[in-house]
Amino acid sequence: MNGVTLLQCICEETRFSILDLLQKNNEMSVNDIVSKLRKEQPLISHHLKALKQCNIVKTRENGKMTMYSISNKDIAKIISDIVKAGQKMVMCCEEPACKC
Image 1 (cartoon, rainbow, N blue to C red):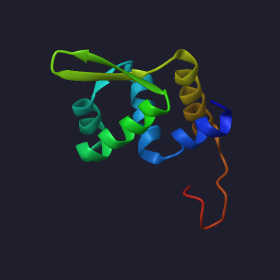
Image 2 (image 1 turned 90 degrees about the horizontal axis):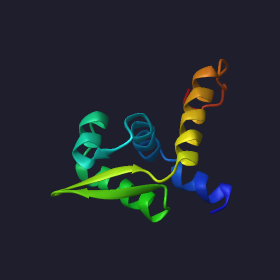
Image 3 (image 1 turned 120 degrees about the vertical axis):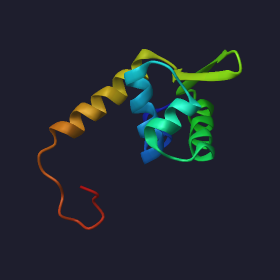
Image 4 (image 1 turned 180 degrees about the vertical axis):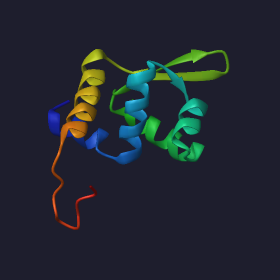
């Protein structure tokens, strides 16, 4: 996967929020993610499926639950670095399209 493809897979608000949660919690079930993000389960499942197809998340069966985690340390570090960089950003653009 090249960098552009990776960014296309993660550059969606719900997907990035899921990855941020997984990066901080190591492993979570769909129900845990739904509870934390306060979004509908079908929406979360849809985005988890997309992230899994991109090999960004992996799954592990735990009884009847499926546990999700980030597939490797490099992806987890990228997510962490993006969050930190966003927190350090002082200036927001003045364009209406910006969501600052």
